[in-house]
Structure formats: structure tokens, C-alpha cells
Image (cartoon, rainbow, N blue to C red; front, top):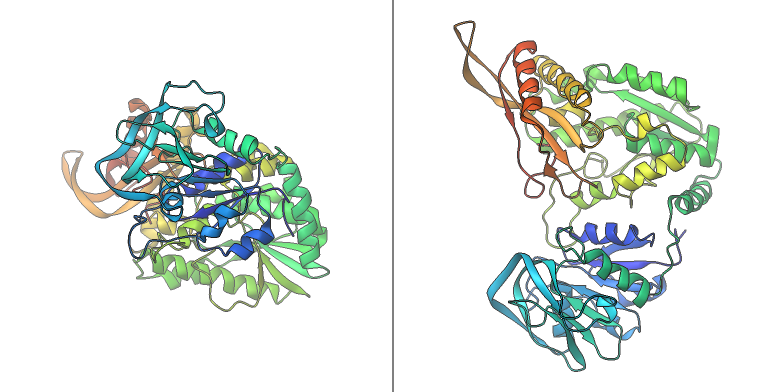
Length: 515
């Protein structure tokens, strides 16, 4: 069942910011979907998109193995926007020429608009605008019937358009925040060129998905993997609204939860929701399987398989249980699957950690949503803010915040440190505005001095990041006195730690979680 008949298609050529394009379009209340670049022309026709966006990508269009979409998309009389690699692909498939640039453009650049129409409608001609470039190739010769819309210092064809067809291309990235005219450019494409209407809202999402869930489930039973986090809570609320008593939620205590997490989650759902929740104590089982395991991918797969085993066991106790619902989000999927090449960043426990053969069919209604959209959906469903604005906590729990082997002692260290980090963030009034803030236990020990005696103890890293959707993130510029309080409390209150460090890595190149 289609979520919306009106949509924009994004064909992904492997750019790190493809998902940002989707976010920026959805912010205009227009639905869009990301598909691999090799989506067939026939499939595209059946989807009847209002417009198509060709993303950037890491390849050069003149490489022998360069990914290419069907050139027939340029003859569909559908507006097409090529971004960076996409613009270069539009160029060569139209008969133009792209070559390696003598001077590459990476970072901020000034764009000079030559034509205030199409993408640049209502913008000042000849005005300088800050945009973000990221390319080592450039368009050297335009295809027939194309003209220049904008230039930059090192890109004489920084933006191009067809004289008669609704085909436009830009060398810069309108989806990133550093392109100050980016939202205007995408808005002009979506509304002026594609003639979309801002109709895609969380209310419409709820209505269409409730109908789709009811149609799929019929009279069968659904079990929901409930962790107490935002994603699983919203999934449970959505499915409960669709099928009511046909839903049974299962909370699994895998021994990798934070201090008081299990008690808090169970109390919340018993007191503030009408959900039927079964609690399963599987601490010994999970910790036993993780004994001696240090590799992060093995950890994730053990945990993913362990969850599925328990859910299937519990489902066997419920008559007509056929479906497993879980809170997989779009960033989870995109980090576990690659449209271009073979590189997978890491296996998400809901995606890459699933066994190939399962007895339960999956229901993942949030699979195409970003975290901020999930929060809006939760509010639409009437969930309280205390559930919606919790910081994300990973499904594998503290297993991926302990680098190396998991032991009871190491779990206790990271639990105590985590309590301190969250307490201090809340006291400072920064918990809500920070995407995630947590402690990581490192697999090293360092020399210290306590009470005039030598110590040789563990190191805790603080990880605090700002983000909108978890696809990209930057380290939080926390006040020094706050960092000092966290460090002092952890060293003084957590036995076995004598050093605290602060992670100032962004994503990319790092991920938010350390494993």
C-alpha cells in the first residue's frame, strides 16, 4: 500500500549525504523515497514520481565501472535534479564532457547565479551565495540544449539546465547546512518544477500505515520487541492503535541494560499505556553467549540472534502469533546495506544481525523514517514527552559501549559512569538538546595516582554528540566545568577508573557508538 501517491524518487549513487536529501524534501511535507541507482525504467514509470533526484557519489562518471542509471529517465517529461555526481551523469548521458578538475573543490564556495529561474527562482542574479562543494571532477562541456545557470571560482558550469526539458543539475550539495541557499533550491525544485503539494504529514502517515497494518495482519497476532526506547515505543503505539489486543509486547532483559532501566521501562508501560507487556529475564543466556567475545560484529550478531530466538519462543506460547514488529529506522537500514560497492559500515542488530531463516514475518513500519520524524509520529499518537524525548539507546545495549570482552565487572563500571553522565547532563539542562551522551569503557588501563599511591586502572571515554537524524553528527561543545564535574565524579565514585577522556570525533568519519 502506497503511503502517498505524490512522491519524489531519489536514486542513490552512494553519497554519504543521500539521506540528507530525503530529509530536506520531507521537511517540505513532501514524501520521497531513496532507491538504488539501478532502479529500472519500467519500475520508475509504475511509481509515477513527480520528480527524480540523482544523488552524489564517490565514483567518477568516466570510470569504466561507474554506476549509471537508465538514460531513459531524461525522456519521461519528469523533472530531474542531478546533484554533483548526478549532474555529471546527466551531462555525459546527454553527450557532454566531464573531466578531472585541475583544482578540486571541497568545502565552502561562492556561487554566482546567472539565471534567476528554475532552481534559482526569486534569488538575486549575480549575487554571491555560499554553497558546499565536494568534487574532484567538473563539467567541461555542456550537452546540446543545456545552458549555464550558475558558476563558481573553479566550476564554470556549477549549475546547468536544459532549455526546454525540466532537467537541472548542480555541482554543489543543496542538502547540507553549509549551503545557505540549499533549502530554497530544493523548495524550488519540489514545488515550482515538480508541482508537489505539502501533504505528507505524520497524521497522513498514521492513517495510511494503520490501514496497511490491518490489511497485512488480518486476524493473526503480532509480538513487538519492546525496549522502552523511542523507536519501539512508537512502533508499539502505532500497531496497538491498528490492531488493539492482537498485539503482545515483549521486553527482554538481556543483562546489558543501564542501571534501573528494566524497572523504569516496565513501570512506564504498566502505568501509562494500555499495552500488554511480557517481561523475559534472559540475562544469564546473553551474558553466557557473549563470554570471551570481543569482535563488535560478533557481539551484534549474537545479540540479534538471541533476541529472535526468545521472541520466537514467546510467540510459540501465543496462538496465531505470526508477526514480529520492531523499531528499525532508515539510518539503521542504510548503515547495514550499501547500494554502491560492498562496504557495510556495521550490522544493525535489527537488520544485519537477523538470522537468514525466521519463523516470524517482520513488520517494520518505521523503516523509512528518520529519528526526528519518529518523535513527531509519537506525539501524533499521543505518547508522553518523557517517552518521546529520551536519548537513543542502542538495541545491543552496553555491549557496544564496552570495547572488548564483556564481564560483570566491566558492565558495572560502565553502568555507574553512565548514571553520572546522564545526571550531570540533566542538571546542566543539556539532556534534551544533545542527541546522545554516554560513557564508553576502553580496553586499556593507565597509570594514575590516588592517595599518594600508584594505580593502574581503566579509562572511560565520554561521547556526547549533536545530530538531527543520526546520519551525521558532531561532538557537543560542552562547558569545561561540566566536563570537569563528570570527570571528577567518575574517577571518585566509580571504582576501577582513574582516567576520563572526551571524544571529539564527528560522524563521519566516526560513528556515534564506538562499536
